[in-house]
Image 1 (tube, one colour):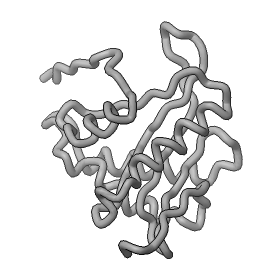
Image 2 (tube, helix red, strand yellow):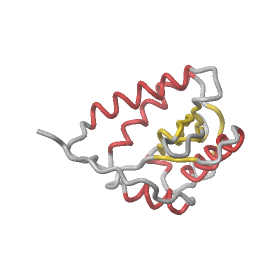
Image 3 (cartoon, rainbow, N blue to C red):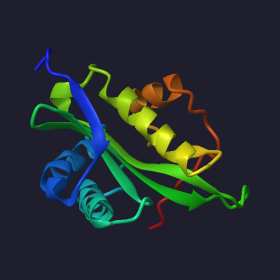
Image 4 (cartoon, helix red, strand yellow):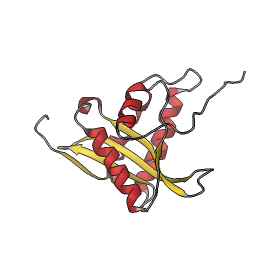
Length: 157
């Protein structure tokens, strides 16, 4: 595995099961207690599978593969910010398989996201990350992402 090359490409619908299997990693950091991790996984799987079936350029899913294994994926789509009022690229999900951590997969996927956004002439690329997910926050900050709006939640009884 160490000597095999990582390949980045647009994912296809046939890879749905492999991509969907990685979605559970999105909650491994321990989401806040008011979030249901099982429901989060269910929703994220459904959304990424729908995007994999899309024949459009937006949304898009890219995979990093190593041999016949999916090392990670990034799920992208366009959004409109309420203040910017212009479309921009958004990273909906970015997941790296546990056995590929520390091998540059996240960096490769973030570069793909940036290329995808630039090709669409977006002037922003955004993502959301849970505050508790400190490892992901460090990766994103290292890649040049900065904080914008801090969303706070108060669960109501």
